[in-house]
Amino acid sequence: MFSPDPDRIQLVFDDESLDGILYGKPVADPTPADVFLPIKTLMLRIHAASASQDEEALISALAAITREDMALHRPICDEIIRVMGLLIPVDPLPTFVHDIASLTPLLEKIWALPYSMHEYDRQCAVGNRLYRCYEHQKRYGEARSVLTALIRLAQEKGDQVNEAVYNNNLAFEYLLEERQEDAMPLFQRAEQLFFRNSKTFEVANARANYLTCVFSLRPARELVDHEAELIDLAHTLSENNDWRARKPCVLLSRIRESLGDRQAAIDYMQLAIRASADDNLQWTVIDQARLDDLEHSPDHAG
Image 1 (spheres, rainbow, N blue to C red):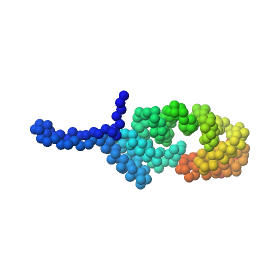
Image 2: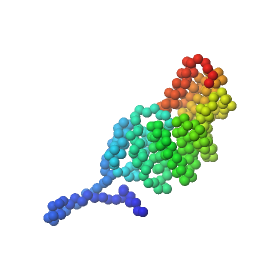
Image 3: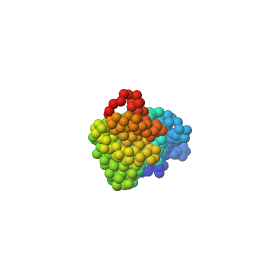
Image 4: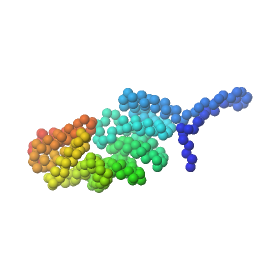
């Protein structure tokens, strides 16, 4: 079925007046009609807000696109997705200054557009923003629906690295809901795919996520055998000053606490906090609360 490119269609307004029709007066020349004029005008506001880093104005302008039901086309959608990448954090549990929930309907509208087999990167870019937007609103089931679709797209494309990323992030949605048993096989699948593609850092991260599930289901004192492995994971994940290095440090702290080594438990929590301190993430607050408990509570085994 033929699908015209809206960027190549010249529409015009019929400017002929009623007098011209009835009395044969000279007909005015038609004037161009642009169904995308409202959104093109709004995009000027969006570009200005983006340039001035005015996030509140940017979110307000983007929300107006859906509220006023403006017509969309591909180049503008691409620009919208690029701008949204500046607003929607890519890490779980960020600290927000502005509410991004109003962006969700626009993302849903762009995600629902028909995509050809050649638009894989474009569809992934939209899906990445949408599932994170759901996640940041704690709409984990809807986030998982998008991630499941992204996994299918990656499999169809033969893109094992993205397939691994989406499996890891799908598992993390379960972990955020404390559904560890649902998360564990997905983390294992992600780890296998990353290993197959020689992604050392990502292998370590997926493994740390898997062990986080294990530690949530069993007492730390039963998991001392994992201590050496966790130390290796901490070294790998800390190479790029990445916040994810906190994960094995937190587990190591729990092991040390369970063995009665309170000072080592405190030291590991301090390392965990240092890993995420500059990233505006709620993990820092969570880890600080645990450190405070270790420093001020009476000694006890975990």
